[in-house]
Image 1 (cartoon, one colour):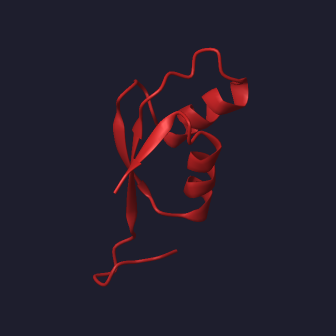
Image 2 (image 1 turned 90 degrees about the vertical axis):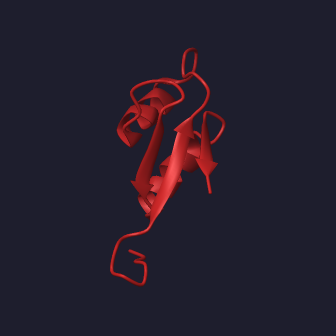
Length: 66
């Protein structure tokens, strides 16, 4: 777990940009597991390996904002 200089966990900002309609059930479940509820929603998620792996699986549906 990476932390910033002040002891806080790093965050990654992710926006859901493309609908999951017509996608495999697994991809829909990943979108829901990340915490998205509606299209164009932006979330600040912990920058951990598990989260990055989930984002990688649905990278065509989400956008990582630096």
